[in-house]
Image (cartoon, rainbow, N blue to C red):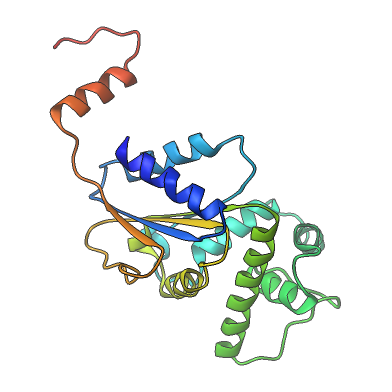
Length: 227
């Protein structure tokens, strides 16, 4: 209850235009994801944009994999559909949030040919990464102007270096945005954002016997358990 109350307080601060970051550290299975789910349940039904990202041990070397996966899901890509259909879906989602060169960068990031409308930009790999990061952050700015944003990053201890770099840049520009970023990770991950303004560290400890019994009784409602 205390941890959820803290998350909800930070959400209210973020909605007021004071961007917040909450870092949730805890060992595997201790309840990081369940706490995030409880936050989602409490804000459901209220006007906001939820952006959720999952990091995986299988994609630690795949640049921006959590970001790419969420974009593909939000745009609504379907396996086997033509590239033109994907491009139209992307245009529909991003109009009027992104300029043409930004849409070209996002399309390339998602592996969608831009065709004649959005030809690939002639940039060095480093410059292309910089401009792609800029496009992603600009689009977030535009979306945040329309409604508060709840960004959830789970299992960041498995994040690839590019995703961590993008998170760095995002956190550095949150101060005046109505955005709450919640980041979960295992204790072995050294979060570089601890101590920054607007960043709260929450270390989850194990439940007491009383709390464990209460949780068990809530899970098995209607069933009898021996003491």
